[in-house]
Image 1 (cartoon, helix red, strand yellow):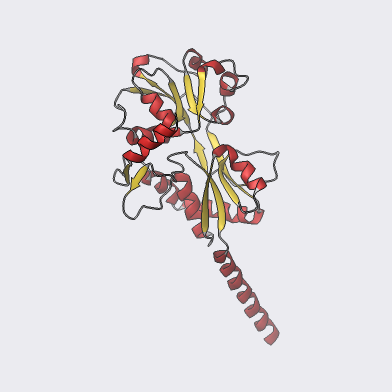
Image 2 (cartoon, rainbow, N blue to C red; image 1 turned 180 degrees about the vertical axis):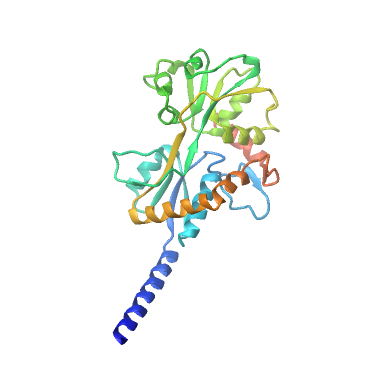
Length: 285
């Protein structure tokens, strides 16, 4: 009987020790930089008091999941195209977020953290009448770097930067703010490929430096949503994360995070940092 009692005490002590080790060893998580409003780790916005560390939809989802997992999160902004290379090359990167799934690497992928619906936005003055992906071929198209590899439904056949049939009418941007600013320039006839969250975010952010009141048409021409995942080196941490993410979705936190970053629903959360916006536009020609 005594032996059983001491065995139980030992197991409890080991569990407490393991929990303490969890909290003592933060998880370093790589986030794709410059992908607002999913990750917002630069100084484009002035956040309201109490929201100083609210760094985007994707960031907040993972932050809440790691809290449930009893881990401290150590975020690291990384250029999106470097995310997978960083977790393979650098021992200090434990997790990367916002990546597409691949069977070729040796990473452990979560259930989808985001399902993104891309849209094609055109100014009404263009009278584009875009109702399919093939209709894009008559226009100059602008998108974020890597979009040709992310968006399905035959998009890359037109806009692969090296072998797309319409690559000469296609431009990709590393900087989201520069891309949206170019769309809103007077006289621009480009069709913008983005998401509703991204479009609404930058329309608000650029309102004082560009005329963003011009009427536009949102063309929902991409039938397949893009699923983004969190990739892990450790499959046991991946399992814990999946469970935490399911809990966030079940009890409503996941949806509330999207509402929190919706400017129309929560207009006082942040305001544009004009000096920083102008600086970024000048440094991203």
